[in-house]
Length: 505
Image (tube, rainbow, N blue to C red; front, side):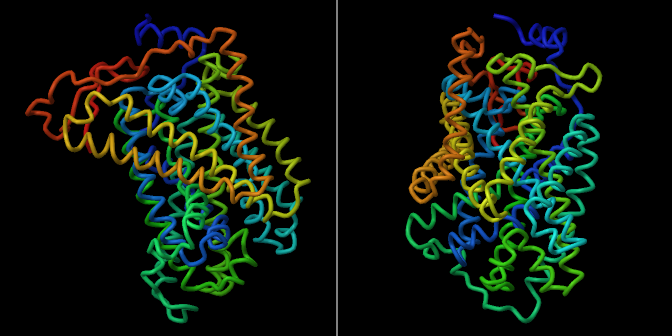
C-alpha cells in the first residue's frame, strides 16, 4: 500500500496534480454562493416552481433547504478525511462501494453537461434582451449567444483557478448586492398584488405528497452547485476545514436569498406575469419595482449570475472528470493537467465539445420553456442520486464515532440521514409525475454510465479495489484545542494532513 506522499509524488511525475494552496476561505465561500447562482436560479426556475406548487414556493424552498443543510454537513465531514477533486465520487466509493461511487460521480458529470445548455440559455436571453426583445425570444439566437458566453467561461476556467476566483469576486459580489437591494424594496413597497401569508411557509400549502415532491424536485435545483467547494478541495488551503465550512455558509446565504424572492414574487407578480416571463421572472419583478430601469438592472444581475454559475459548473465537471481519468475509470487522458497552469485542459476540452453538440441538438427540441422545464427536472433527479449517496457515505464512514457526542450524532448522523431520506423520497415521489422526455434525459443519461463502469472495471482499474474510508476515535482533543470540540480522524486520506481533525460544528 502506497503512502500519501508517494501518491502525491507519483501524481506530480505523471502530470496528474492540480495547483494546490491556490484558494482561501473567502474564495471558497464566494464559489459556493456563485455555484447556487441565486439570480439565475430565481429568474429561470421560479416559473417552474410556481407551476408545481403555486404560492407554496417559500415552503418548498424552506423544507428542501433544511435537508440540504444535512447534505452540506455530510460533504463537510467527508472532506475532512478525504480531500479529492472527485468529492462524492471518491467518498461513496470508499465508504460504500466503488460502483456506487462511480454512479455518484457520473450523476454529477451528466447533470453538469445538461446544465451547460440550460445555464447558457438565460445568459443568451439576458444579453439579447438588453438590445432587442424579439431577438431574446428567438431560440436560435439565444443559443448562439449563450454558446459564446459558454466558450468565454471555458477559456477563463482553463487559464487558472486564481483568475477564475478573482472573476467570481466581481460577478457574485455585484449580483448579490443587486438582489438584496431589489428584494428588500420589493418586500416593503406599497401596491402588492396580494397580501402576505404565513401559510406560504406551511406544509399545508401543498396539495398532497405528490405536490410537495414536485416542488421539492425543482427546489433541489435551486440549491445545487454549492458543493463546487469540495471539487476544488485539492486546490484550496487547509481544504479539510475550509471547503466544508464554505459550503455550509453558501447554502445559508442562498437559502436567505431564495426565501426573500419567493415571498416578493408572490407579493408582486400575478400568475400571468410569471408565465409570460418564465425565462426571466426577475426582469418582470425589476420592472414592477422600478419601471424600465429596474428590469434592465435585474437582467444584468441574471447575466452575471448565469455566467458565474457556468464557470463554477465547468469547474465541477472538469474536476470530476479529472479525478475519474486519474483513477482510470474513464480514459486516462482526462486526468492530465496543463504543465504550467495545472488545470485539467483535456477534461475541459471534452466538456466543451460535448456541450456544443448538446447546444445544436437542443435547438431541435422546441421552445425555450420546453428545454428549460425538462432539463430542470432531469437534473433534479440526478442531484438526488449523488447527494443521497454522499449523505449515506458519511454515516457509514463515521459509524464508529457517531455516538461519542451529541454533536456527532446530530451533524454526522441524524441530519445527513434526513437529507438522504428526503432526497430519495423526492426521487421516488416525483418520478411518476414526470414526462417521458424528462425521464429519458434524467435516467437515460445515468444509465449510460453503466457502460464505462463495466468497461474499466473489467480492465482492472485500481479504483475498484480502493481502500475503505473509515473514521475511528484516535485521541480526545486536548484542553488547548477546546474550540475544536470533537475527534481525531484516523483514516487513510488523499491530500489531507496526518491527524486531521473531524470536529463537531
